[in-house]
Image (tube, rainbow over all chains, first blue to last red):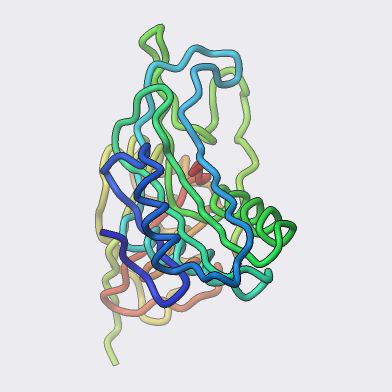
Length: 163
Length: 84
């Protein structure tokens, strides 16, 4: 069940599948309002090709409690920053196969522009702030932590800096 | 006021792999900062690869290098995040 919620925000980190739209429809019905004329729904899915390499599966690791708190904080900030009615967001952890949904975001708003902007801001902020890591496994049997220094790159990927 | 504090350290993602452990602990003088801890870890065996500017969370919130640590704090070493 979704956790870290208040009236208009639902967020959760889960090992369970996020592939089914229906769970978000239910939440939107619960936290959304008839004042909202737009619903934006975003899914991030496991892609076969990343940086030219054939991916076979992904393993996501999260700093559990902090990830719950950060995801909730991000969505509450979106609610304060944009003119949106409600936000629901969830992120998977554990092993994911190709095509599986790793992240899902639903935003309702009175008008479409606010929804598009909020949805985009939430996914971009997740990518720089949410304490989640991705271990990519490739078809050739190798694996790599995304964002970590790689022998090919020869240098550290410039991640976000806090403090 | 105690002379020394003990903090719990957590290593995530590639840091867990490089450190060959997911968690540990560190003893520091009282009033040590995040930067002091990172310096101590970098000087400890097997952790010299840790970036000086590593991102750190204290008790599950992102913290600055100058943040003062307290006895019993949970300090996570955060490699570049890759959610989404």
